[in-house]
Amino acid sequence: MENSFKIIPYQPDYKEDFKRINVEWIEKYFKIEEHDLEQLDAPDNITANGGQIFLALVNEEVVGTVALIHDGNQVFELAKMAVSPKAQGLGIGKTLCKTAIQEAKNRDAKRLYLLSNTQLTPALKIYENLGFTEVPIGEILYERTDIKMEYFL
Image: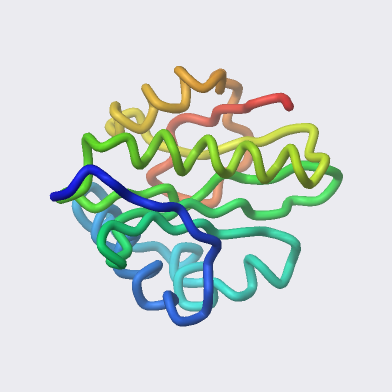
């Protein structure tokens, strides 16, 4: 796979790609849950409620996604971060995260958080390298969640 990629804001034409990329990684490690489907079947709800989705493209093919879900009071959840196996190792995940962080700053967010799983070592390494720190989990939306991380802007 070619090393050049671009990051673009979500457009409705990419709805199926957003779902495909996320289902691919979730099913590899876990199972699709109801809350996943709420987001994956209706990504326009994320953007309509003050959030944003970014897509990574290689040769016009969607190979990565990340979502910023507005959680009120200048807080966003970083969610649905995924990179297709064929495009991993190109720095796409890190670039998607940096893009989401910058977008949160542009929206005057004070804090980002994410819910993940300790099996996802490459993703956790990206988050840690970008400044996310582990915090107590609290209420969880997914069975697979065993770690919560925060980033203060």
